[in-house]
Length: 284
Image (cartoon, rainbow, N blue to C red):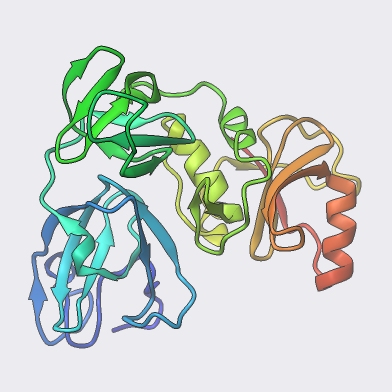
């Protein structure tokens, strides 16, 4: 396989590759892959079939995935349909689910075995999870294969938020988690991706991918003047969202949470800690 292919986005290994890559990459065999969906609340995707590695990203309940290989150790090699990320997940997380009709619009919603908030819940789904609503039952929606979810915590698949910054601000003080995409833990690019997707804007997963594809580049003033709400600020391996002309919202490992602070302060701290400065500014 040629070295210029990004392993994060290319379903190809020396022994196996996706059928659509026939003639493009070299592999011992090629397969079509099987389309499935994730049936766990959140599923971790790893670069190799090992638990002692940092996760690449997370997949949410109901997300579509193409499965290319399964092994006897309980791992499946897959590609996420939404952002194209390739990696390994637990085979137990893969299911044949009904096509989704709705999306979770709350930061997190509880799933009950019956249409009552007084009985113990048995699951919790994050913002962006996809479900198939079977029927309405008062204030609840009965979700196929799961149970009952508060109806106002769901929205139709074609309904989107208007301001991705407002969505991102709902994650303020959520713990920082490398590879995370939910209110239980999120990283800098996960915050941007999840917030944009809630507004119907698809985005790649990692910071370098975002810097090369989202919006258009802005002139780089020495004091970063002229920025406005929704502008994206990039460092090597890091991204933040401008809340206004001076304030930055970002998930970061310094405070181990999503924080809001003046861009000038964050910039100076990052420069002192890493020696690196802002690499680009982009506007959607």
